[in-house]
Image (cartoon, rainbow, N blue to C red; front, side, top):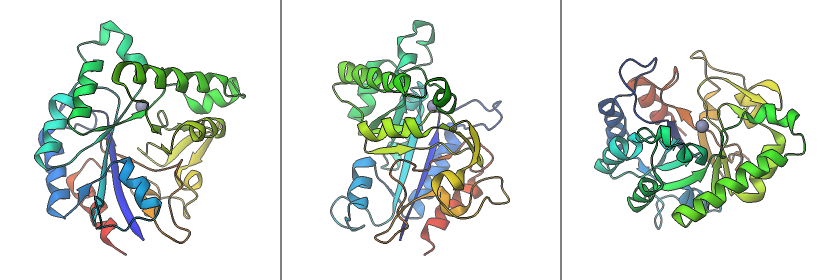
Length: 273
Ligand SMILES: [Zn+2]
C-alpha cells in the first residue's frame, strides 16, 4: 500500500496568528520532505496511481507527497511558490472565485493574471465554489442541491473564461460536507478533497467524526485528530484505496501539523508499511 502525505494551508500568516505560518517555517517543512526523499505530485499523477500506475515509473515518483493550498491569497504567489520551487515542488491551488470579484480585497487576493502565473510555474488548480457556502447547512436549506450545482457551474465557467481551463478536482468548503454536494461534485470532477484541521466535520447537518466520513476504522488519536489511517491518501490494489471523493488533506496551521516534529512524524508515517 502506498501512503501519500497531503497538507493544505491558506497562505503564510503573521507570527501573531494563533497558528503562525512564517515563510521560513514552511521552507523548513519543504526541506524536511526533500531530505526524506519525497517528490511532489499533482492530481493527474494521483489519478494515474489510482488507475494502477506503479510508483517509481514514468513521471510517478517512488515516494509521492502532495502540497495543496486553499484560497487565492496573494502569498501563494509571492511567498509560497518561490519556496516550493526552491525544493523542486509544485502545488495545487483550490480557490473560490467570488473573492476575485471583490475589488476591496484586491490587495490580499490574487488576480486572475496572478493565478495564470501560478499555472505557468507548474501549479494545478481546483474548484472550491463561488461563495464558500457551508455545505452541511445547504443540505437542508436546499435539499435538491440546486444552489450547490449553481456554485459549481458558475465557478467552473469563471475559471474557463479567465484562465482557459475548467478545474478537474474540487475541495469541499471548510469542514463541511453533504451527500448532495458529493453527488454534484462527482458529476463534474474526478476527485473531491476534505480539509482536516481537527477530528470533526459537519456532514448532512450532523457533527461527524472524520474517520466515519472517510470510512476508516477507529475514532481518533490523542492529538485531537482522526486515526492515522485517515490522514493519508492511500493507494492500494485491494480494498484500502482512498475514496476518490473523500480524500483527506491535513491543515498545517492547526493543532495537528504546525510543529516541525509533527510534520516529520507525519512524513515518516507514510514510509511505514
Ligand atoms: Zn476554503
